[in-house]
Image 1: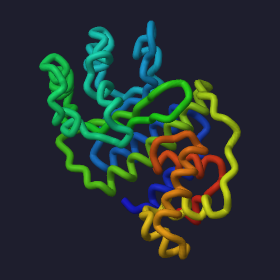
Image 2: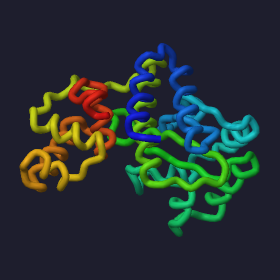
Image 3: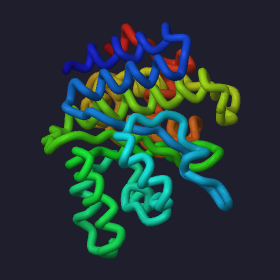
Image 4: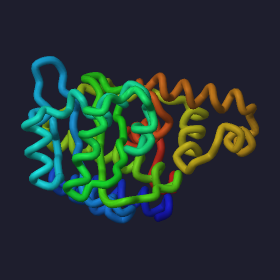
Length: 244
């Protein structure tokens, strides 16, 4: 799948009028990488249950029932690992850390009973009402870095669109103003350019390119460049056609 196809997918989401339709479109997108099931949820706070903060869920019924009945969310490494990474991580990567107990690891193992042998977690930090995540899973999968980046971008945008359509909105402040140079740098970030490549294209120093991008992240209140790109697309600071 190419970057152009990813931006085509994101643009398609704008034409969908329901949260369910948007989630189905995202799952179809994820299936192109071999994933068959998924979920989208806010992480529950005190006195909240995961079933009440889940926006979309397409898990095998038996696994859904067990997960909720056993209240696995508090011990699930997929959730616990959110404090360690703002970037997407696979189940294998998170289990590579020796901080998880046998009980916690067993939760991931039990998912395999329902055909969920590997998965990817996309953290959604930097939002005002707490962390959220998109999780997708399937059989034994190998995920090259470019595929991971494309899923990351699609997941962030699908989450924002679903939240808007479902009425469970987070309170985003008015879109901040970006300078022309900040817009230019963000536009090039959207097509995968590094700080050095941006500096060459715009005839500025690499440090200056990085400063502009970091300033954009601060203005949007986000933790990663991918999130900044999504905010830029949503607010019109950068464009689909230019990004593609």
